[in-house]
Length: 345
Image (tube, rainbow, N blue to C red; front, side, top):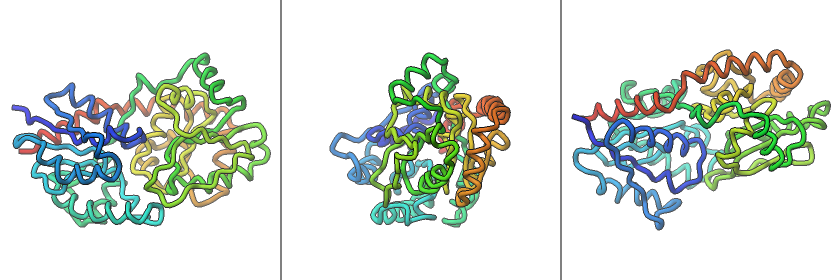
């Protein structure tokens, strides 16, 4: 007999970033595997008020036999049949990147949540090790379930679609693409500094930044658009695959990533990827990407230069990336989450 599943669907009240995409994609596929029920807060519980709903009202809305899954880093600390996904511990490891109230809340929440939840899900061994180090819990309390990519959405788009999106965003020049939140951990300050020093290239190639600024972050990076740097802000899912597909290369210079979903999306669109070696990505994607030291401006510059000038290497990474992404599907992720939820008795 299957265990019915309730999903903490507070994520539907927020704009889609990596965490929300994971939550939507896996929730949708869990519904194909068995009985699920999305429990969504009303409109009065947006923003920080959602924490009140999550702690005091959500537990009362779940049935006695239901297992509860919270996919987006937070959940009720006193639910007896609860599994929570924690994507990374950035606000624990680097509180300077976030607002004081954000850090205080999540440090307090996670210290109790990881001990009271029946199981913690995270997306990489990299993140599991940090959770175990930070909270001194048993290794069997944390399971690694990699994220996936929707290859019916993120695939190499035809030239006609790419040209339409480039026209929409006035991208006349070839471009290097970044996609992600404009948070300090994304290390955009160093990326911009490295880009400014590439005078031979930045006159004829644009650096395109896609993403928004959340109120959890302590400061916004200083983006100087005079050096052929284009900040497009938030781009919806309709246009994002064509932006990936049209890029010379994708860059993710993060100081910390629990998984690196945007890099996977770029690979799935046939875009060569270069990224920081201090994240979960090298262990997940191996030789399908070009890895660099995110604190070394010269290493960032040389990586960008190599992917601009070395057409053969770009094509090699493109082919390797398209092959590698076949191992990462949301169906596989959902199946493993479902099995974890069914293990609760």
